[in-house]
Image 1 (cartoon, helix red, strand yellow):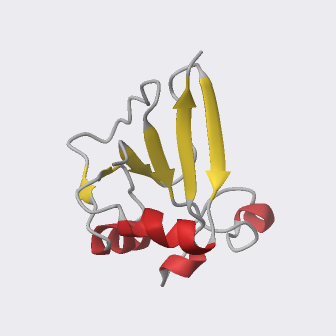
Image 2 (image 1 turned 90 degrees about the horizontal axis):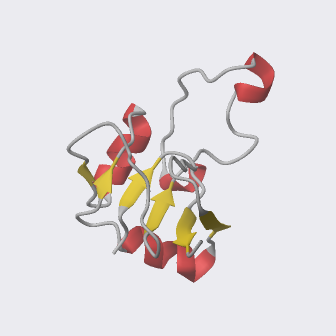
Length: 111
């Protein structure tokens, strides 16, 4: 089970991490394993998609990080689909389906 679901790669604790984008069957396995996992996602569309997969809101908005051996999933908008490059900052963007999002797994490794 994952420790958290995030909207992007967030590493508030120093350490060694492995960050990997998953695709294909591995992606589906991750998405099917999100039931009951706490999420820290504020973007309304991404939040709705995540909760539709069974995730639950975290009790706080502050993600405190991963312990060694723990994993988190992040669901960022796929590169090239956001308006950040053109606008220079993030603006609200409608996300209609899970295929608009990448699926990355963050694992905290031993120091």
